[in-house]
Image (tube, rainbow, N blue to C red; front, side):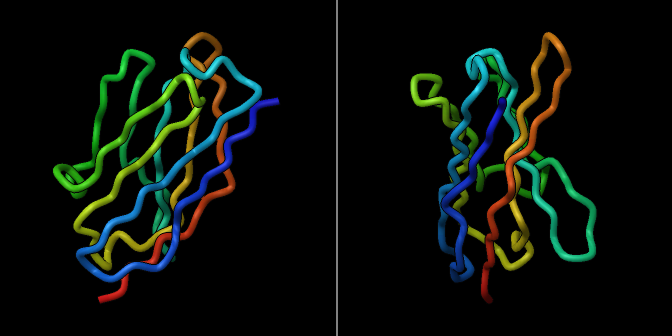
Length: 117
């Protein structure tokens, strides 16, 4: 079965950087669109960044120029490089995979990112 395992979260000061990783298994990784979502306390889950199988990328306005999504199909892994972090980036970050053929959607368990001011 499909499994997504996030890592790389933690506590960082404002202005710092973190790189999140999401290791996928049980799927033909290269065909999936991969996304990072986040959910802050009391807020809805929101899409942060996405990358297609053709490596087109998209970002929510608030992270453009600070976050970079990338994928390594040889390692079945998607990354989110987060620079110039702000306290408002504090959230649980979730990896998401979408099968473009079946529209199947899969989620990881999430990793906590906390940015202190």
